[in-house]
Length: 174
Image 1 (cartoon, helix red, strand yellow):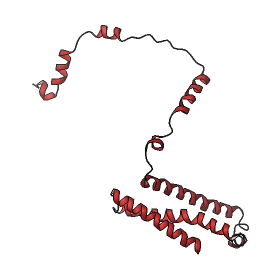
Image 2 (cartoon, helix red, strand yellow):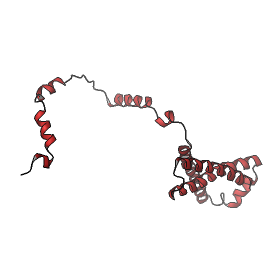
Image 3 (cartoon, rainbow, N blue to C red):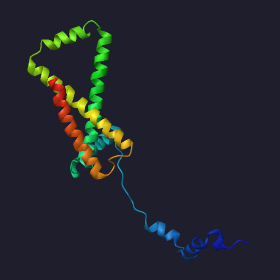
Image 4 (tube, rainbow, N blue to C red):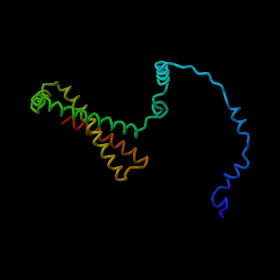
């Protein structure tokens, strides 16, 4: 024969034995009368949209101080997406009009631009490329288990920024 302790029913049996038996009175005391108003679906949708406009967008925009770690992560994603859009955009343009976007026409077009525009364009292309490349190496080092401490993450982040600045200048001056 099994005892209640071996089955684990001891606490449950104690609670059932000492529980008050006024279930009917308790349900009557908790009832409230609520008046509701039926709204058409458009009005309900309008109320919901007004409530959504009053909500904060995200707490990290308002309560957290910007940190190198999450700014670097966002910048890495943005630069990767931007470089991908440029690459695929040029590839699609070349597929659509191969005679317009071939190497000779692109070089001829760029050669006709003023020097300030050339340097600005090179900087606009070189900075995201350099940052994404150096930050990619930083992520590979994290995959190998390096720089995973807070101090290591910040030192590698500052190293990425310094390497980005130096390589951007080098690429622009080429």
